[in-house]
Amino acid sequence: MVKCPVCGRDYQNTLSLLKHVRLKSRYDESHRVLWSEYVKFKSVNDGYEDMFTETDIFREFLKQRKASF
Image: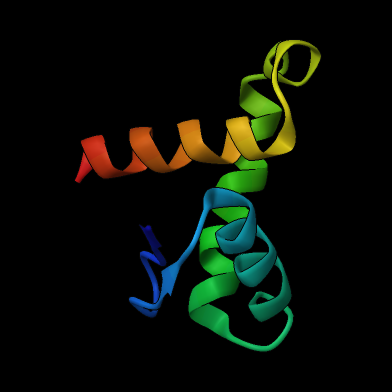
């Protein structure tokens, strides 16, 4: 189970959480901020896209974000 860091809802896996954040970012400011952080994380870590899937990159983003808090 993976918990959304914004709203606290539980998701079965990281892919479901990724889809949730992407969708909610269109309508909710808090989710938009998280999505913007993720997009920035991807742009800074450019080499990740060659080696990892979108889900793997999002999982790594969540780990690093959690570690920084």
